[in-house]
Image 1: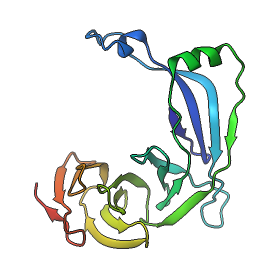
Image 2 (image 1 turned 135 degrees about the vertical axis):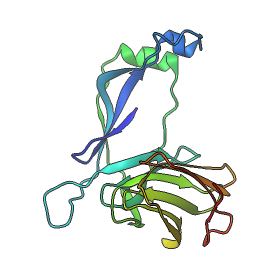
Image 3 (image 1 turned 180 degrees about the vertical axis):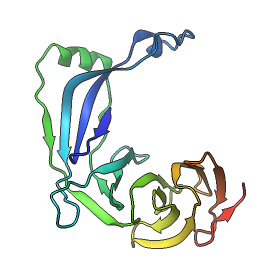
Length: 199
């Protein structure tokens, strides 16, 4: 499990899956994840807000479809990527590692800033299909579409209540958005510069 902390750290925590989850049994009463206190990896953002000593931190993280990059948004609206490939979990390897003392790995990969895409905290980032475009949402009340290679904003749509949830169709033609007031909206984004509200 990857967790972002307000002091600017990302930590990788070890998680145990109970047998009933692995076996997909129907009884949901005892299903739960056990998060261990052991930190496997740690990465530090090391960016301050303006001239202050207050650390900026990552408020949104998700892996690309290739699981080779983390796509991240910060408290202050910065958008960027981290080249940290996801590690495949293997039950047999986990048992062997459990018997050995494992040192915490400190990651030093560079955070590649793509731009400041919003004025407030990012609450969602999604790729649009296999293209180089992205759709983002933020507490600044906007859903925006960007060309990642040039950092150019293609469209921006104001939301009366700030958007809190975002996903997209696999082919990148539709964006689904939910807001803090419980509204649900669907946008046709085939024409990137002119998202069309369909619901």
